Image 1 (spheres, rainbow, N blue to C red):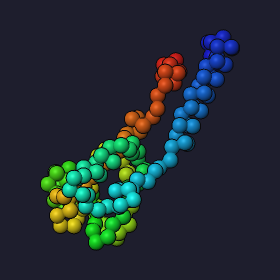
Image 2 (image 1 turned 45 degrees about the vertical axis):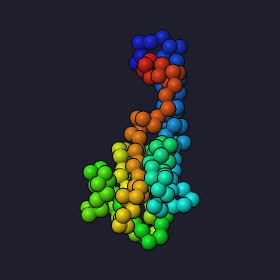
Image 3 (image 1 turned 90 degrees about the horizontal axis):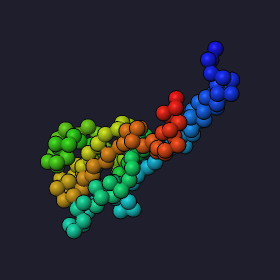
Length: 153
């Protein structure tokens, strides 16, 4: 039993329902996206004057858990590696490896993913990419109205 007057209690119930509805709509409208490394050119060695193309393109996107990255290539491979191996273009201990020419990698947790080419000399020539996946808290849009409603509860 509530100690609030009936009209005030009904107001809180309506507000609570509205907040729950707001959050369920935000979560239901979220869907995973697919990003293609290298765009229409695919996963290739970049031109000498554009060795940062992969990271510039990746930084223009907001990756979320569940999104995927597609790597299309010929006579090459893709590897997920740790940061140290990314910086040194070391392909000896990949966390993920694929050489099938059409690889899809699911970004399954928040954090940073490091990708390099496994073909000799390609990473050193710029065929590598860093992808930062936002945590669920970073990806939720906020508004003053939503913040004020949360403060009331």
